Image (cartoon, rainbow, N blue to C red; front, side, top):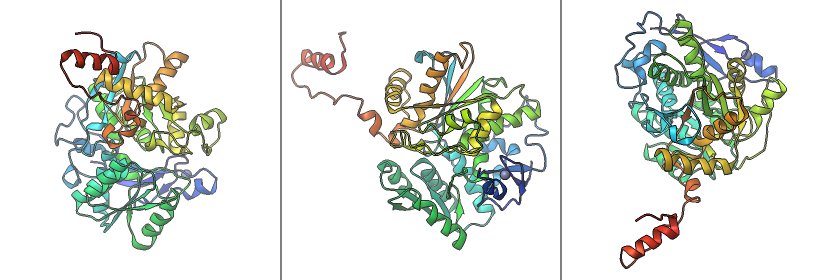
Length: 417
Ligand SMILES: [Zn+2]
């Protein structure tokens, strides 16, 4: 099993001590392109494993502990990972598969980050865990802190989705709201600095990404996808992107499989986002994605940031990827389409990849025969408002079947008997 030997800057490669997790790379920050750190190991992750017999126990992402920063026996786990990879032929988007992360314990992909981060919080002897989150990351931090027996403080903001705040509080987290989003970071930073709170989320600006140990959890999405496809990675992985934690983690996971010789290539990555920041940076070649106010009030609350990160840009550049800016009309259309045609109802941000694939297929940037995997990040019940506005009020009926059929015809356009 590999042992973490350093935290390494995702941009310049500078090395920092393994307990430097509450900071970014000082060299890149002073160069105007603040960059996250990622875990480096003393040996190749997965080295010595038999590809023909990949690990099958325990029943969580920790079966891949030969690639991770802690042994499964020490993990704070709720059975996260091992999510289904489902074909989606009815969507008209070619060879497309959905990695459905809404099946995780708190119904989002952030459980991989929560599990990986809380495992490390306990190893570092943390007394309190802290997260700044509008939703999924806070819910995951809260649930895994509960499992670890650690108090959890979540800073959120006025306007975050009610069910998500309720979910955090249900797990026992102490949730506080602030009026201005950026205030969360000032307060969490003070808690980290003065009280030693263990941060699982971003907590200073410009944002670089989440806790490096937490991000290791996202590597397991890549392992699961590659294993399901018999070690033939898809041509493209398409993700809803805010700060690009999962984007970076998945890319890193595929890189590791390639380094082991288990796979022959790494997929290209697409960031489906709402601000326009990453497409602008890709086009300009700048080191730092710009702040873009466009569509800041998107219904895709989970990816509502106005500025992309260096780590996301690194993956797009290194993988030969694309970035696509998605609007609310496309999100609403794909929400209804996905739920009614494939039986999967995700939160609004999770359908951004489908809108992106539609556009990239039409532009010829994704070739007709190329295989895509869309990462579906979280469940629809966490924020039901966006789809609710697209659906009719259920008709009230009285009388007999004739009245029922009239109601079905009027409200739903149903003509058959
Ligand atoms: Zn650096």
